[in-house]
Length: 187
Image (tube, rainbow, N blue to C red):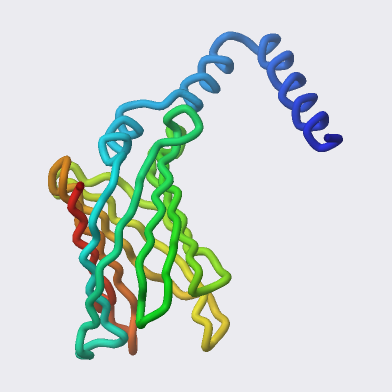
């Protein structure tokens, strides 16, 4: 309760100082906090999805295939989208969750991913490519073998309102390869 009080006091101080600094600062904060067209684009992806997943352990390896389902919904008054995936992987129950949003100030998308197969979090930032209808995220995750953070890439392509493609790329021996592809179809 004490932390909440401190946070509320900080917000009140900011807005009282902002009022003294002028309307431009207040407008900047309001613009920063107001969902816009990119948030509306994410909201079109709300709903239930079937996922066809292909995974490669290393370049040239035989692919592993499985299916899952996911549910996506906007939260925090349309500012962020939460997607929860469930299925099984190698005979074990699998669940994962992403939070994706658009930062109005930085003009970038961001995404996080956590799942029940690890204890870390993947984080990435990327820009919208209107020609390709995708966001190309530069991501980072921890390699459980080396215990070091490694760069990755995730590309989410919005094919149409009922289809998406999510690709993950890893680095092996200095070269990028596709490690996963998820084809999503809205149910």
